[in-house]
Length: 312
Length: 133
Image 1 (cartoon, each protein chain N blue to C red):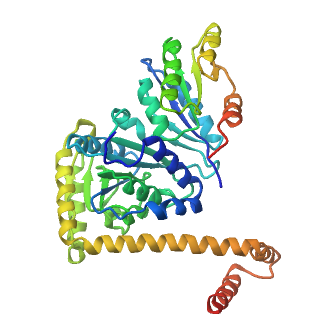
Image 2 (image 1 turned 120 degrees about the vertical axis):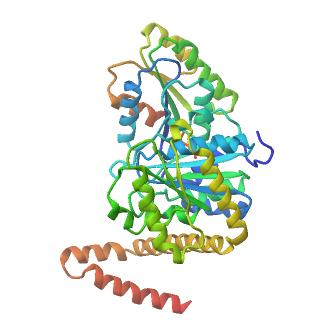
Image 3 (image 1 turned 90 degrees about the vertical axis):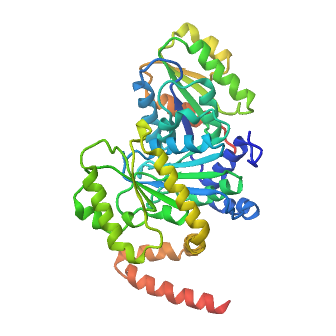
C-alpha cells in the first residue's frame, strides 16, 4: 500500500457505499474529511457508447503507474430505468490493474441521473481526492449530446470520438462538443478520420474568440496503445496551463459544483416538507380532479416559499 | 436509506465460455441489482481485489473448466485473509453433484448447476446477503 493513501481500500470502498446509499449521511462523513487538494489531477473521460472510453482509461492508468503515481477511477454505467439494476462492465477493459495496490477502481450505476454521472459521483470523487490519490479519472456513461455534468468535476475533460458517427451538423450542435479540453479521436485506423479532424478544427475555430484554452486534437488507437503518449503530453500541457492561468477555471467549477449541491439539497428538503405536510399529495389529487394544475400549484408554492423565507 | 445489492460476477480460470455468467448477470440486473462484470480469465487474486474495491455483497463465479475445487475455495480463503468473509460466495457452471459437498465445506455457500431457474439464485442472494450497512 502506498503511504500517501490515507485509507485502506476496504475502508474506502465501504465509505463509498455509505455515500452512495445514504445521501444525507454522506455529508457527515465528507464535512470532516473534505480537503480541496490542488495536487490531485482530476481527468474526466466522456464520449458516445463504444468510443473506447474504458480502453483509453486503461492505457492512461498504465502511463501514470509507469510514473509511480497512484490512480483512483470512478466508472459510471447506466442503471435500468425500470428495475434500477445495472450491469457495470467498464472493468472488463481494465483487468490488468485489478491486483495493483496503487490503483483503486469503483464502478457505479447512474441510478436515475441523466447528466452522464451518478448522483453520488461528485461526493465520491471528493472523498477520493481527500484520500490522497495523485490522479483521479472519472469515466461517464456513454453520452449523446448534452450529458455535460463531468465538466463540473474534472480539471481536464477528454472527449472521445470515433470516425464515421454523423455528418457535420452533429458537430455544430452545442453541448458535449463544447466541454472538451482535449479531443481524442479513437479508432483512428478507421475511415473518415481526417474529415472528423477537420470538423473538430472548424468548431474550435468558430469558438476561438471565447476560448482561453484551445483544445488540442489527438488521434489514438487505444487497443493498440497508439497515440497514448500524445494524450499524456496534452494532459500535462493542460495541467501546466491550469497551474498558470487556471485559477478562474477551478473557482468556477467549485462554484457550479456547490450550486448543484445546494439545489439538490434545498429542492429535496422542500419536497420532503411538502410531502410530510400532505401538500404534495393534495395537489396531485387536485390535478386529477381538474381543480388545479401544475402551473397554478407552482405559483402557490412560490408564494408559500416567499412567506417562509421572509419570516425567518 | 435505500441499499442496493451489488454482486460481482466473475469467470475464474481458463475456459472461454461466458454465456452462463452473462445470463446470471442479466437476471440479477433485472432483479434490480448492480452487477459488476469483469470478463474472462480472472485470477482468484483479481476477483478478491475487485470484490473489495467494489464493496459487493456477493461474488458469483462461473467455471466450466473443471478447476472449481481449486479456484472457488481459493477465493473464499483470500476473502477471509482480507477480512471480507462477510461477502457471500456462490458458484455455477459445470460442477458435478459429487463435488458440491466439498465446496460447501470450504465456504462456497451455494452452487447452481445448468438449468437452475433464475428465481432460485436471485432469491438466494436476496435472502443471504449481509443486512448491515
